[in-house]
Image (cartoon, rainbow, N blue to C red; front, side, top):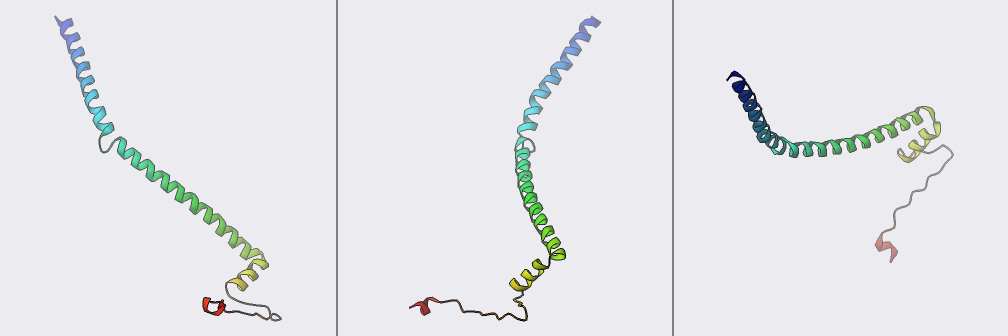
Length: 105
């Protein structure tokens, strides 16, 4: 009788565990915090990784620009001319007004 109860109890325990797993696993996987949440987080991760790549490239470009400004006199002159409108002492700068539609007629 003890053997029967021991086997029956073990079988019943395994059966209960199986039922619990069969019920709880799909609820956890397909519930709001399961697979849909994981897919949403994966999408966010992909977006953040793309943004990170763009920022990494921009940082690299800025580091190169800083290096050029520290070491290359031609880079400093180019920025002084392009952004600050500076010229050498022996240069004359001519500035022309952009042609408008009324002036073309």
